[in-house]
Length: 364
Image 1 (cartoon, rainbow, N blue to C red):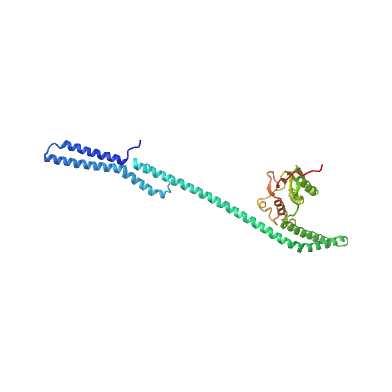
Image 2 (tube, rainbow, N blue to C red):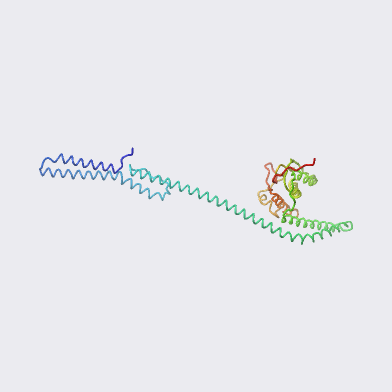
């Protein structure tokens, strides 16, 4: 049951006062003596003053003070960022007002916290999108750079390859008569031949980098690609004292066997160079080829730039920085990916993933 409100209490108090006044008047009314009239008037005045004083005290205690307290706290709410709770003061309507203000304060705090959480989430999304935009821009720049290299390579190959071929051919012819030439001249001719061959290798790599592969896609077995590539580097591995471990299983795919052989051959030669007198594993499983070695692995500075064109960690004169860029291009043209990572046991791992194909028919 709802408790009686302040207005009802004051009404009851006034009614009681009036009834009390009527009772006092009735009790004092019988005599008509003037003295009695003055006494009766004095009693009424005193009673009225007492009623007024009592009503003022009650009103101050039940209404005025609680409202003053609530008003003062309301002024302090903004300064405290709505952190201080509204005190529960008074009774009846003032108390209900205090409870309503406290509920409102809690709602404001909850809404503010929700808004702050939303702002943090929006900031995180903006930062994430900004990073995605930066990454996308870097990818666009890299693709544009590759396209520019491809256009440049078409002209450079024809302009440089022919003179390099002439230089290489003449140096080779002169070396055929090396027995009649001084030793210093023979050494110089070997240097000329090596550098001319290097020029041809670089221009050839530029052409392969900038020109889409035109090989025919056909059902192949990645295990056959692994065996073919390993056979090509087996002698080089023996000279370097590297143990080549081959683990293959039937792995059908759809692709250009020659292009994939070029890709795997490049990965194997890099692994052999990184792990002299170590071990290199080549594994073929459905949908992927992995090349792992026991070398030093990739440093944090090298790993993000590993597939950039012209980026190489080899000494000057030993690498063009185009091999892995070409390998990734071949993987992407096959609808696959080529990634690099460090092994937990030490060394590096190159992982080529390709869409699986139908089993390759074998001759009976």
